Image (cartoon, rainbow, N blue to C red):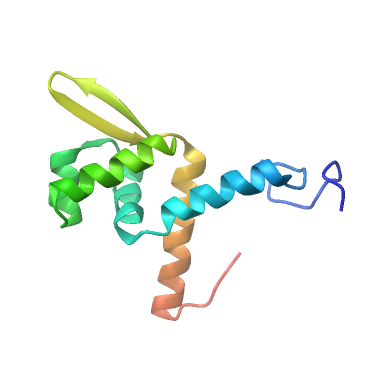
Amino acid sequence: MPASESLPTAPGAHLRAPDSARLAEATEVFAMLSDATRLHLLWLLAQGESDVSSLTDRCEVSRTAVSQHLAKLRLAGLVETRRQGRYIYYSLRDGHLRRLVMEALSHADHRVSGQAPHD
């Protein structure tokens, strides 16, 4: 199907078929989501912005590991930072990522719990 053709999608979704640049970008996002610690950090940030210390306490990994994962997520453009005094607060870059993380974990919940999938 040519990239200019429309595809049936959910309301508000992009209607064009993905080209190689969009497929590559989506692949990079999924690569960042493929690490359990990074996915956990993104889930925590989906709840609201947070600093490294708070994320470390809630994620149960070392501060060094949290900082390294946050640096990767920032360089990938998935999280943003905001400085307040000597603290740096991290947040998700956009609602698309929030929905993607929540949907991935909801899907996992259905598979682990045995609940029937739904639309």
